[in-house]
Length: 430
Image (cartoon, helix red, strand yellow):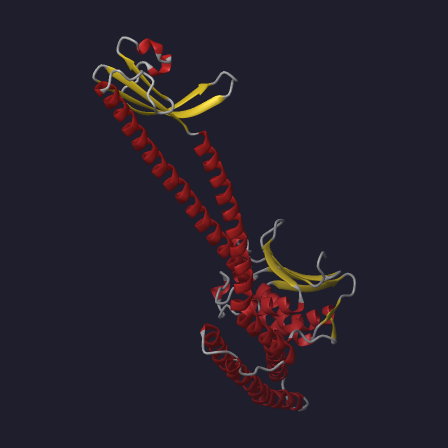
């Protein structure tokens, strides 16, 4: 994973590296040019001097073999053996030479050789002083590179603070808006530059977001009013009708189904509205709900699904379990899990187990594939079997509700028999 660095840090490092690279490049170029020009000048001068010495000796043979020039020697082809052994077979030209003097120190010098008229001329030039000057130049250039690198670092520190100051101010204003709970225009506080354009874009985004949130709030309010009212009328009407003495058992059973459906619709609407509000503001806590009681009510409301199928539905409870959440939220979650278990089980048993910190719904249906267990909680994904009816939204809603309250919901295949196990863990580690 790539490490994330602050923009200011990256600017400072960029300036420091740029200054170091530029000054180092200049230093290397200076050394290269100096060495090349110096070498060419010395070589040309030495070659010219040795050629001139040979010409002078040829034109004036009465002159001694040692020329008037310092460190210049002249031999003939017959006396070349008097020259140092390393010089004797050298062709005309200029050479870099190294030898050891009588004190045991290595000496670096240039040697110019000329062969003409049966004469052999040598001129040596001690370049140790030039080597010392080169070392001094290298030291000066290294010091200059360090100085310019530090200067570039200082400029980077100053410039990064100055350049990023508007960005930091923009971030500070955004944090203040979050604390205040309301947004104000940002663009008037910044110049007409790139940061000003960013502030203007943020203002436009905040305006659209505020309008969307307002529409969402109005929609939730309208849904709460428009749907709850007819459902309340249905519920009260069915309750009144059930009190009629001339009702047959068949009609009374149908009225009970209408009443249960109305109650489920009311709970679903409450849960969805709660989910919509809570995802913006956080979950509302304070209401305590008994899990076993809600599970029992859900089982009773789902019994019409059984019809003539040979299915037994039972509720077992170990330790009492309560959750800090509205009953409508838990009811919606359990209605989906228990309803799916009954729908996909053609025969056998559906067992709802309430244990410490969790509830499990165990069925004897066709089961699920392990690789499909997590996919079933995605929107639009429907289970196989039993016709695959539904829009594939139930388990997705259950996952959102559970995530909102910090619960873990999962479905896995049974290992001891055919079927699946749907679980909600209310307490982590249970």
